Image 1 (cartoon, rainbow, N blue to C red):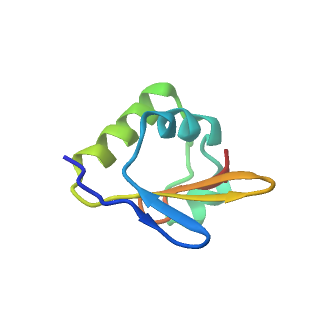
Image 2 (image 1 turned 60 degrees about the vertical axis):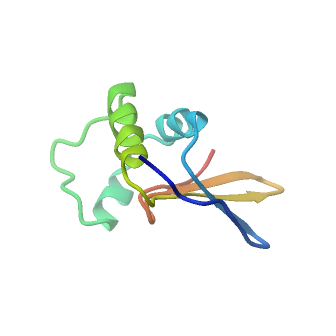
Image 3 (image 1 turned 60 degrees about the horizontal axis):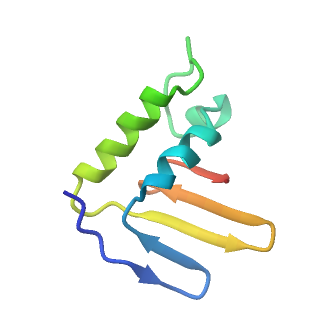
Length: 90
C-alpha cells in the first residue's frame, strides 16, 4: 500500500497517486519517442488503453513509496509519476 508523504516545494508537489491521475495518464497516452527514450520496445507499440492505465495506477498504489509529481504552471498542470515514467501536460 502506498504510504508516500506529501512533500511541497516552491515549484512541485510530490504526493500519493490519486484517482484523477488514472485519467491524466490515459489522456497522455503512449508515444513512440517517450517509450524509446526510456529504453522500451517500440516494435508493435499500441495506443494506451483504459486497462493499461488501470494496471499502471494499481502498480503505483501497491508500492510503499512512489509519488505523483505535480508541477502547476500558468500553462497548465504537468504530471510525472513513478520517477519519470510520465511527463506531459494534463
